[in-house]
Length: 118
Image (tube, helix red, strand yellow):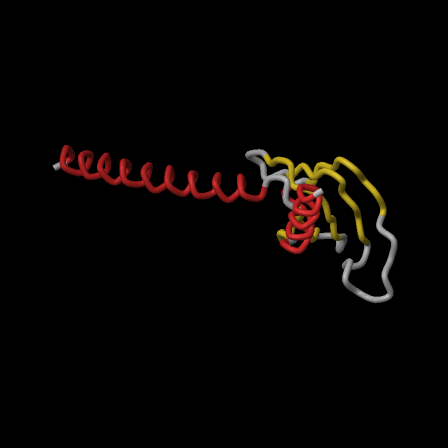
């Protein structure tokens, strides 16, 4: 009886490993798609950071390049001037949400098309 239970546990463990591997692959592909994309990160203290996603680590810390800090959301009125941070490390424990800014990517693509034409 104990042998049967061990056998079943080993089989279930194997399935869990396969599921974990697939989730890791999907997560990795998602992160790779975000590389060098403009993103907006909302933080626990109310600040919003806008910059280019460069990398992350196993603790969910995020490295952003060309980063700007807004004390109020960037789309609220009246507009405030951002504080330029440049290269920034954002601790994962302070991140509330992450948004990929597709409009910035499209604008960069349009600029690239214009440059290629000339």
